[in-house]
Length: 270
View 1 (tube, rainbow, N blue to C red):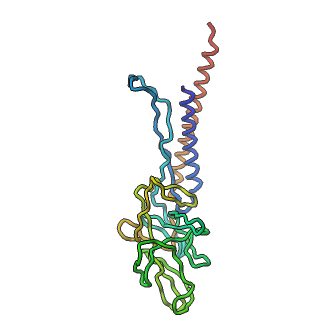
View 2: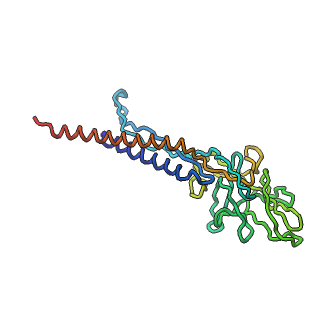
View 3: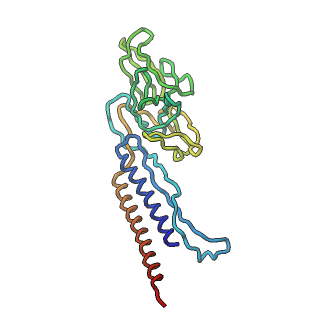
């Protein structure tokens, strides 16, 4: 039994090493959230077994938990680099598949059709507004900036306020609100599925998204001209890496000791 108990320990230590390695690899990934492994012990015995005689048979991975603590903020000066200063996720919808993804990486840009996008096709979602910035519908949609205003003046620039209102500026000096960012929150964010590129999708565990306006209630305000960096603490991860390595070595040593004992018993002569 000791062989399989220690083998479980080796596998668990390997999982821990994998998670820590992934954290370290993404220490420079904007919007990345670190993970940690939670273990639980395994005990074998029937209802009639004396509880004083129960022997543990190892451990198993109970969960790989995500830590959504806010990461440090880096100033970039780009108006479309956005940070949620508090709770909430940016919402994006793929123009190709229609899938909805949530992210804390606010690195957006304007594509050739005037949409605010992240990556190649993930369009930023916002509440529709009138020209003054008042929300006209609570159903989010893709943000598209007209190339010219109603007077025919060409687009000159864009700004995003703390309250999430996206304002387009035009060559004639006019400013027009084109939407207000829709932030998403979840009852159990730890249940979100990682999709890569610092993005998540909703699951039955996380619950459905609840949308709200930035800088209202418990939804965070928007900081323009900055990006949220990874919340990975390299010093903490390196200590965890050493601990996981020692756990792996200890379980390997236990297997080696069990092997020596078995060999000794096999070699006994009467």
